[in-house]
Image (cartoon, rainbow, N blue to C red; front, side):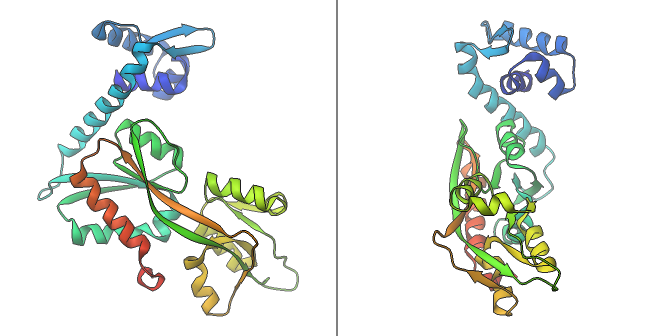
Length: 282
């Protein structure tokens, strides 16, 4: 019932929540009615535009998140592998896993091997929802939204450079390739380089894929310096000057009431890996 309550809250209506839960609208209504009877108060006001929380519903919301998180944690920890004391469920954007965070897993096995790991990849919205639902303990993202009950910690702020590789032949162009590094980057690049965004023929959501494209076809794009430094050292590309340098912060988000004995080793490992010199990551 707590999950149904949160789905109605997020979706804004019983019908939309039913679609998300893959049940009928009457099932959603029955669950909410049962929950209201258990609590002895009304949680939603239903009207033509959907469903909005009552004052009691607003108060219950953070408890519903905690209930769901605790249930998911209990369910998964009940099947812990032998020899492990705790489970850490971590999710990240795809570009962060395949560029940096794959090194975090062996770090954890060397330094906190009593913690079992479940690693996932997803979009920012889904990762944040996982933290609220209790299916994730930590999410690593470029631009997390501030949400009730979540703590957000800056792990590192990378330097973004405008990197150029020459066209592979006389017939190829060298366009600007828009890499989607998150909300903050999109706002900055649209503010300071709107002509590049408007003229970009290719937009790619994963940075390493964007760099692969530039390596194959030539072009320019904003990339973390440490990602392109080997190409610069090999004489295959160059950094173009910019009047307003950009940066790329990387954050960890986790529930405010998370178990520090599990979260602290994970954050220590993330900061250690992200701060390592480029040659140590290769």
